[in-house]
Length: 483
Ligand SMILES: *Cc1c(COP(=O)(O)O)cnc(C)c1O
Image (cartoon, rainbow, N blue to C red; front, side, top):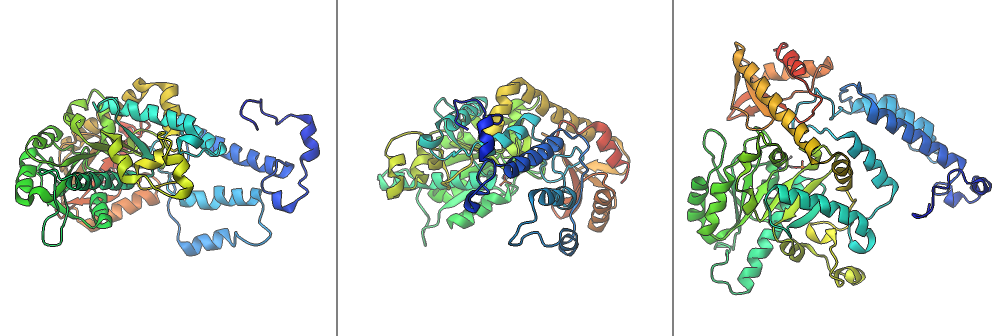
């Protein structure tokens, strides 16, 4: 279908073309076979997107799946109808429904109907999201979202970046840019630039001991060291703790990472007091808000993020609390040029892209080919407007507070820490890890909820991570009643 022409599905003279003559084009031509297949897939997708009773489901052993599914790949093909039926009746039920209201583990996902539906459009359109040359329209829309987020976070006009696969890659790409910036300054002979520590020239990242595991992963990939700083008992990393680490490790620290909503607890570090250290020390300030920074959109939590406006880079995952489907992380640089300098790939066949000076998303992270994965969020945000997002995020915050109060009021239950955002961590008096394990397994087995055990400082506990606006107080109380 040409963009500027109406859809040709009903065009009569097409019918003559509908039986493919060439086996090589069978899978790519518009034929009865392919249109029937597309109808099947769209009908399934429509049912799934609009269903409000998709079961929670649970994993199945490999042996059992092999038995149920049989051999699915052979030379002849089993046909689209059978393959789709296998997916619907065997494979999909062996996948936990991550957008189920009683999925409360890790960080759930809860894409809006609009975002999920538009993900089909992104696929259908074969968009290439890596370069302006190929995907200008898609890139423009993604950049609109990044600018909107940047403004929400108080970053200056001109901040920008790219949607990458996830927070792990976002953190890595930001930290690579940070080190590149330090190296660049060194190479320019700047006397106050960070400098790797002898012996061996080790670069260092300072972060909270409660920072996400992806920071340590990025450090391993980059072959740099992490200096973990133990936060106060409330879990918040503060400027004074970071200052001590900066004094001890000196100029070898090229980046300080603060967490804006820890994954385990939803605790936001004291961003303002950490940012203030930039007056006395030379470092790149990265804010990992993969889960929590979305909370800043709600007036209920906005104040907790004061100081994020000083960040050199931030990430937030739309597939967590911004209601977009997997997989998307918004990586935003205060000065995008820093990202571009660190990440642009150079090759003869790419020169036509890099020499033009256009904004190409590939240049801002450790990737090249990319899906325009920011578009589902763009479509949903454009459709509903920011206020709907604020309402949805506020509902999670309010529910977390309400269930925290309920937990505190129940004999035998207690909060491990007061929630700041929408993660509520609590203990059952006297329960061992084995008790939590058995309870959690039973909840999933009975298809009541997916609530996994966790721990803090060696003590077992469990947690509700609430991001789905369809999760209700009654759902959560029913789970407490099983303890
Ligand atoms: C989830 C999370 C990450 C990792 O993001 P992925 O999208 O899973 O790679 C990083 N940091 C924090 C704080 C997170 O919650």
